[in-house]
Length: 340
Image (cartoon, rainbow, N blue to C red; front, side):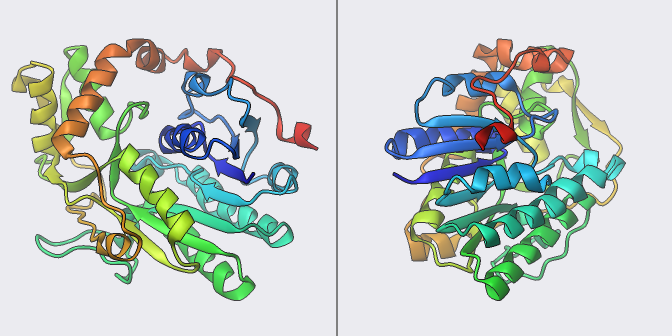
């Protein structure tokens, strides 16, 4: 039996990875270390809280004692999702981004030096590469050129992971994904915000001219890719994860409104945000060529499934909009110190 430590497992991608892991690796144990900040919805954890192979530990990756208490249990694999990730929030106040994304990653790496693991996967983002012109794609050796505090903090974390791998022999791998979407995504992010606003017949706002381009990746395809990297990837390597699903924000908004049978008159253009990257496009040929990963979902299929989930699960997202979602306790909760 292997023990997996998932940091940030109460968040969107981390919780989806745990749900998949409990199915795909039923003989293993999954420990979820999460600080339960604003973007962690307690109800998200209810679906697997009763599993005998799952433990929730409330703790902070930037707190050395919290991390120490968990890693000394004899962890085999670490998948590091824990991060502040919303660009708009980083522009307003970047301090928590530096603390969680940079200091948190450093704290985790230092603890792994004391308690070695078999694999450490650092989940990063294609935003560390910056913005692309109308042509071309990001490859793994594209120079890092972050343009906002969020992506700068992730780039700093990436460099720390690479340095600890080369200097100290930490068996690390880095994944850099394109924009994720799917069920249970916090509604401050673009696609769930579009869906929930349209369901309330409120304006669906787009920055600038709405023609910024993103490469969209369904969360389940991303989780499969991370598992592929951990199981089959090489230590010290970076793997891009994307699906060639380039769409303008305007195209996505129109498709969401079409699936909801809502008028395009709901679309509203607002002033662009500072440092807004124009285009992302991720070349995932390395992970396909070397590890055999390919996406299983088309963009339209995955988006329609996502829209239907939000339609059917107002109980999950409406408390977020009203600010009452943290009233409940996550299932199986315990503090990091209880693991001693």
